[in-house]
Length: 139
Image (cartoon, rainbow, N blue to C red):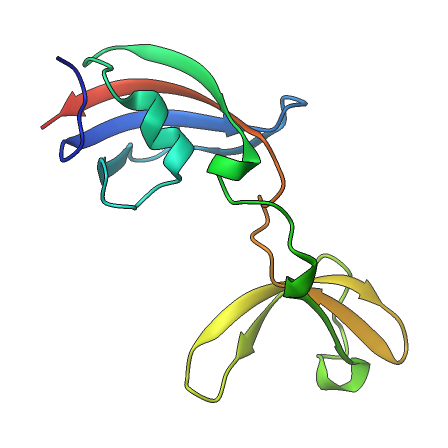
């Protein structure tokens, strides 16, 4: 019967970009554990494991539409350079705190003496992702 919605699954995974660069893996730590259908992981990943059995291994690609979505230009914004730490560099991750106490992480995309362009897109937005997985447990 295999994996179905509602099952608790434990698996090892390695995630990589289309050029083969690994962006994340569970092989050197605890396996990933989640409930299928609970919205804990990206939709394309869940779709691919449905029907798999314990011990199965699989390699698959998840398109950005079923992963972290496209890069959205409306999530990029500029701020005065003086509002950022002096030692900030392009590529740095910063927390932006909102008046309601929530915060989100942005990446510094561009920087000059007057202005910084900050990007609140997920770092994996706009990227197709390749996964290699092995199913360890199904409950």
